[in-house]
Image (tube, rainbow, N blue to C red; front, top):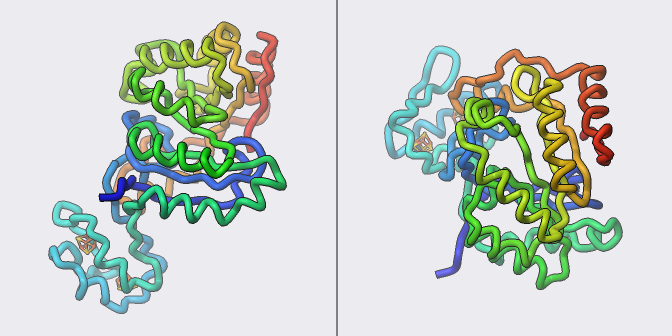
Length: 302
Ligand code: SF4
Ligand code: SF4
């Protein structure tokens, strides 16, 4: 049987996920639970059902098609009983208004490769390629290795966007097929890291130190989230770490944005950062200067 992975999107013409024009493949599943996550549809390794009631035209097709009795008609919108929903996607098949959308589908390496290969001329003309993101691509190591390997066989530049949390064995298997790693660092302080992301950061930092000392091309990516990471002490600690490991492509600050907020609602989840405002330009510039003061190249995304 062909190897499959669980993906939730393939984004064309991406220009912030590595050099040049890229196609970014988003994989499902993540071991972290960052409070500010803007891709909540990616956290669960299995498909999840999202609802956009404003698109609904009231046709009732979804009610007819749900085999698990998870849907009913409410006064204003279709009601999903998430305790019954199996995320089978049957209700979405004839929801042409896209009021119900399933995030997540199984795909083979060949299917994904066929899709990304359509953009070869853009890669060739811009120095771009294929980026694997998520979720966390290393959460599906077998599929990720196979897909990266297939991309390299086609001559595509490959980028891995990762939180860094994986075993040494997984890292050893994936690195031969990766040209660039976009490595997220969310804090050096162990206690705060656990509070903010739900996991210990020791393996993440160990992996970072090891791959940087092995000459892998790395860009550190640092979310700047007010109340969580966008403060001078947190960024100074990360800047010191960056000065130690000397990532070949420097550091990129990622100011928090609110685009993920509505996604939580569509999934029936509470957004942990509801109402949180992005950092203002002055704060971002102060944080950028802290990183730059260590002699590091530091850009701000967006
Ligand atoms: S199929 Fe879609 S558009 Fe029709 S009632 Fe259901 S949610 Fe609304
Ligand atoms: S995803 Fe499947 S189980 Fe869930 S509401 Fe739709 S049809 Fe019913």
